[in-house]
Image 1 (cartoon, rainbow, N blue to C red):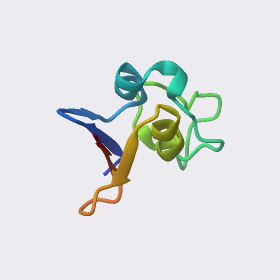
Image 2: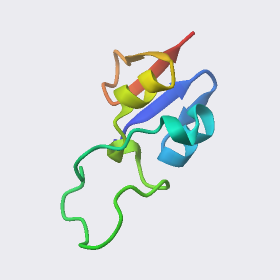
Image 3: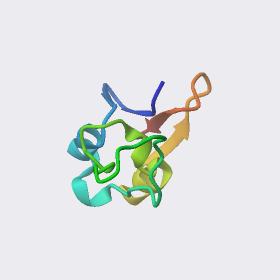
Image 4: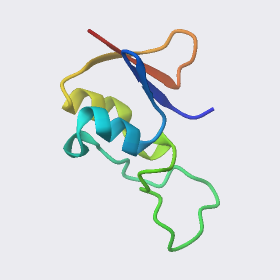
Length: 81
């Protein structure tokens, strides 16, 4: 299972979906490729891949959102009001 971000009724599974909610400027990409066996020369910061390439704590904080990790699934981030 990959990361997800729940913001109210919206659940974002990709960087593009998250950017639609928090804005493209708030996305903070990870410093290192998180994927094993990634094809050389292929961009891993693709907005349509999973959220594993995004530094979610930094992104949500930069967007000014209060968040926590789900108690059920540590890969699920929940934004609170």
